[in-house]
Amino acid sequence: MNALRTLAGIARLGLPGLLLCLAVLSGCSVNRQLARQADLIVARDQPAALTCAQANHCAIDSPYRRLAAEARAASTPGQPAHFVNVLENGEDSLLLRVHLIRAATKSIDIQTFIWVNDDAGRLILDELLAAARRGVRVRVLADQLFSLEDTEVLSRLALIHRNFEVRIYNPTFHKAVTQPLEFAASILCCFTHFNQRMHNKLFLVDGEFGIAGGRNYENRYFDWDHEFDYRDRDVLVTGEGAGREMQQSFEQFWIYKRAARLTRLNDVNQRLVAEADQALPLPDAERGVDPMRVSALRARAGNPAEIERRFAASAQRVGVVDYFSDRPDKQDGGSDQNQQLGEHIAGMIAGARTRIVLQTPYLVISKQARRIFRDLRARASPPEIIVSTNSLAATDAFYVYALSHKYKKRYLKLGFRIYEFKPFPADAAEMFTDYAALSGDGADSGYERYGKAPLTTNGVRVGMHAKSIVIDGQTTLIGSHNFDPRSDNYNTESGLIIHDAKIAELVSAAILRDAAPQNSWTIAKRPRTNFVHRLNNAIADFSSALPLFDFWPFRYATSYELDPGCEPLPQNDPGFYGCYTAVGDFPEVDLPLKTIYTRIVTAFGAGAVGIL
Image (tube, rainbow, N blue to C red):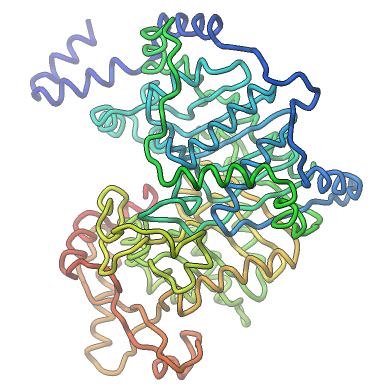
């Protein structure tokens, strides 16, 4: 009766309000009858037959087995040994995943924020299914917001094999797919819960071969997209020490209350019941790029000699490798270690002595981090701080960049040397697989959907997605943490911390190359030559301090391009302005300045930092 009175009251607000409340009330619990029916269908129809009778489940030979044995033999309780491959190239990372899936003898556990049913996502999915049919236990835990957004796909996966299980993390209203009305309702009724996402990325085979970093499962993370590819980084670690930590973290998330079985999702169990006894196949991939490329990668993944030559032979032997992950109850306030990774990163930065090399796609620094950087800046000999991040032309998050742009003066005053990645870097052919062979209009396609700005140049755009820190040339963090308030406070995050100078040198060199003049614009303050410039800075300071709207269009800093014939210089060098030319706040972006500022200023302000 109370519910009816509530609905009657909201009905006075009109049909939209009534529909919104109906969506909320109808989706607040699992349909237990459908869930029981779906469980019975799965138990009855899920095949258990295996394609292999061997003890190792017909795993292919892999040179990484040799490395794992060497790591075990060299490890002692006080000094573990590992082998590490830093994966800068997207297709390399995909190739190694497929190879290791085929080499699995016992288990494969995957945790991800995004899984798209395109060429790359479907390739991994098919390989996982083949492994499950061999006898390997396969578990996939994917955040609900952007993963496998198709109840047809998920209902078929629920039935596909006894050794294969998918769980969806933090589903909205107990559904796999959030409809627009439900999305709006979730923001109104339960935004805090909806806004908390599992951003972890983990790929673990047999508890001994683990990949962690920034890559999700979609073409653009593996250099396979025709419009927009990511410059990303992850790392393969071979060894039992880090493997145990990865396994323990995965198990915590797998059994946590937010990890929903497919039969507990109302839209999936409804479809399972409706399609019972039909034996329907898994639908095709939604988006494709090049079937020949998929076939070629499959062939290479099964060639141990190529894996040895390209990866295992160059794996670096290191000592301590730590896997850090937020606990799943970070979002529920139920643990003393709620921000384990974020707090560890803060400690690493606070302990820096000589140099911090940081790479993040979104330069929006939390209050805690600002305090740490202020303390570093106040030292008699502060460490050098080099930051590689996205330009507006390269970013996939237009609105987050707006906040970064708003606070550029703050970051420069903290001593940051900022370099913003270009959408068409000169070294792209070496950074990305077959970049020169890719084609596509690239200019305006999809920019509204993905939060990217339209450009003045056509072609395959690239953007920064790597999240890494190198401290004092000794310690390296590679993970999913964006070093921003969202990663600190809302998402759960994970990453590998490697204590090895050689790995630090490799990663630092890669970041510095991304920041080089041919690949990034240099951010520096505008020269203050007269009263007008000083007045502009004063007004800009006042405007950026406003809690909501930053109305002043003329900023303290702008983008610079290195002049031909000049050598790169730091922004504080006396000769900087003699060798660099200002190219505007938003180079290569095809939007009038007024339009950019109208969209940035009227929509977002400081209050959105934590959410974005």
